[in-house]
Amino acid sequence: MVETAAESAQHERPPAPVSKGTFRAVRPDIVGPEEPQPPFPIILTGAVQKGFGRGGKDLGCPTANLPDESLPVMSSVTQTGVYYGYARVAADKVGDPSHTLSAEDAVVHPMVMSLGWNPFYKNERLTAEIHIMHEFESDFYGHEMKAIVLGYIRPELDYVSRDALVEDIETDKRVALNSLARLGYEKYRDHELFQT
Image 1 (cartoon, rainbow, N blue to C red):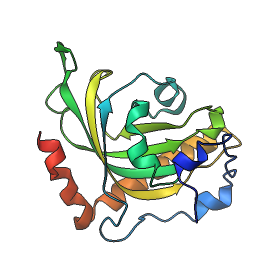
Image 2 (image 1 turned 30 degrees about the vertical axis):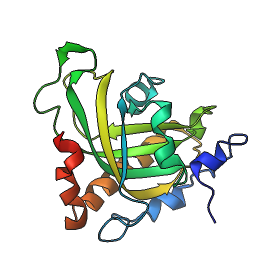
Image 3 (image 1 turned 120 degrees about the horizontal axis):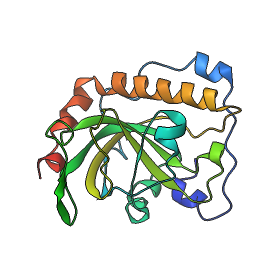
């Protein structure tokens, strides 16, 4: 049985396998069954936190970090790795209604998510980082984010180079979009979570 992310957090940061070019060469374009199966869907919510700032600056993939207290709902039932689903950022910032996102920024968008230790960067704590596949007009730190995780893409890996990591991230995005394009997943864009 595969260890959950929460179980792995109980001891030293676990080593991740190193990604090899052969892994990237055989990755499927679509993952998962025709509709989400347990433990999915998994609902995550929380105010967007400042992270390490590496996603956008170093990797060309800005991420929204969830607060630590929102992680157990997922980390207790899944392993570390990369996942896909949908996310929506609230238009108004928590406690500061003067910072409002545009109408286009505040709708439901596809997302890809990393749950793990980011072994390439040697993180010392488990994190959940969501990349919403949309070009936002401004940052949204402090805004409430709601996400529905619908499926698993791949295990967490370590990398021999930043370029290899970026290549896998770009593949993750394509796989997420292809996987979400199926009817069993598209319907979650209109989930009641996003209506409130």
